[in-house]
Image: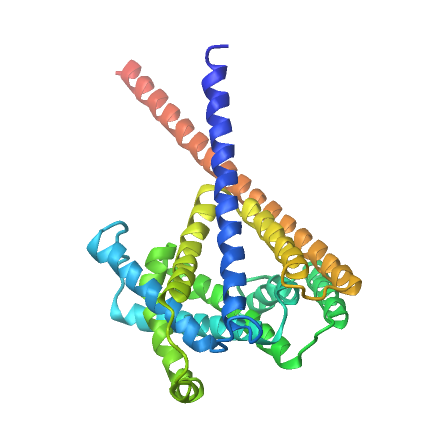
Length: 349
């Protein structure tokens, strides 16, 4: 009985911390999405410059990451050569900048709820690109699952009250670039044994994103901003927005590092449904029954895919542990045989 109390307290503390990490991540993810929508939407703050907003985020995140790593020494930097940076980080930075640019641009044309529904296509994109680059094996049942998700999203799009073709193209492009980035991280970094936490990732990737975004910004948004003399930069609005974006990266690190992949997937589902409810009830976006039916189908497909991936990971981990146990048993057997042979030699002498 004496030992049961502290163990129960420890388990309860772990559960409490897990729920806290989930709540923080959901709150920050929710806040960043709604905040970006507020700034970019012409009916709200009316500052429709997604490249500029993304550049502000990247500048803030790069500066804060530099301070945390180089000045405060909170996190140790990863040893990285110039060749590795150019061959691995730069392509990932380019993909990340395109993903952020297009996804922020979509908020000008589409509702928050519909964007969340389109994001359900992310597993489809990641799996398809993984198969293309031979990081995933083609499986018929998985492809059928991917088609069911796509079918659900197509129904949701059909039921969208304020469908905008250009907005859909932008969001689908963002999904494609983000999926490619995730696969490239596996190919260019993980395969070389390099792992970046959110702070070191921003330290290396954010400046690269800033340079890539500078090119379209000069031709697309700078001429318009130059003529908009009435705009005055609001440090409070954009400062809090950038701080939330940086905090979200740290929250991702906490959620993934301190909980599990399943917790992350469940948190994503909760966040998506909360955003859809918020978009309908507060922003007054139209959410139709066909929207919800289509997204419900897509959601079931994504849930099944996540379950299958989790089971595969568990099976792989169990196989790894079994192999380690066999190896340990073999080593012990060899030691015993060696000891027995030594004793036999001594008795013969």
